[in-house]
Image 1 (cartoon, rainbow, N blue to C red):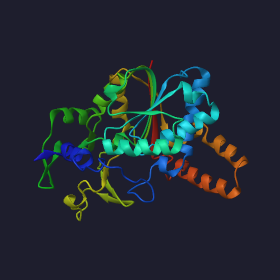
Image 2 (image 1 turned 60 degrees about the vertical axis):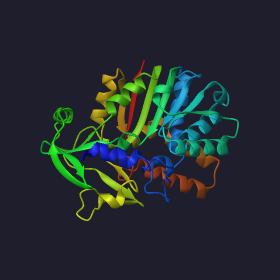
Image 3 (image 1 turned 90 degrees about the horizontal axis):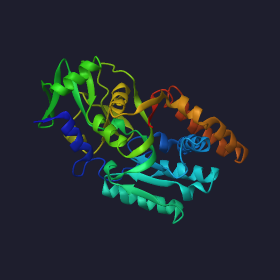
Image 4 (image 1 turned 45 degrees about the vertical axis):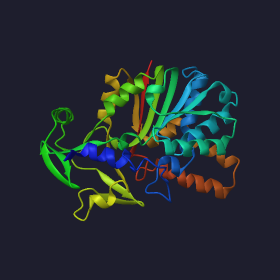
Length: 330
């Protein structure tokens, strides 16, 4: 018998786990992300970084680091825009990815070289512990929902026995965490505190910006679900056979951003902004960037990109469901 978090870790990161190998995202994969939806997602974030460089709050020789970069599209889009804004930044700035899966690292190296050749060097770190720099701007997309979690219900915790969920005695630390957030049902993430501590120790100064789906409160209901070929499968569906999906599909849950914020503040960082993805991307300049694109593109291409951006911003799509969180160490 094992706790659900151990089971989920094995599912996602164990030998031949779901994330051990490179997974297609988008039409040919199990789900879409903002990165796979439109390159304007990364360009908007890079535009925000560039404005901070111009203002002097981000050094020209700092690190831009993506955590959980999948193939490398996001950091690639950001590098491309920074080059467009100021080509000298490609020589002065340093770029890196944090990725612990060797097979995924190889896919990232291949993509970065195919896109930039020898013109851009992107370091790949296997862990946050390898990073010790003066300044870093960290970016991640859908990373907090990829942590393992415990499932709780009426002061009990879920365990797995022969691929069957059973309920038993709740761990005291999990019980205290649930009490803190007035939670009696749902998911309690495991590992946010150690992750935040590791981030805080990477640089003397840093900004951490991340996008994910969730809220700044708990709903006291289960959000955990399985994604397979763009189909959502509730974990507690009567027809669900866990053994059939184990390691073969993505498993995820809604993020409790209050928990994330607390973890980073306990690690000595300060919350700068928490807002919807739509508000963040508009503030980062996505509308102005689209207008610039319209002036140098065909009407057909403009309409296609505008439709993609609508997916990023529309309240009924990604716009409100996804949140942006910005934390800082100074």
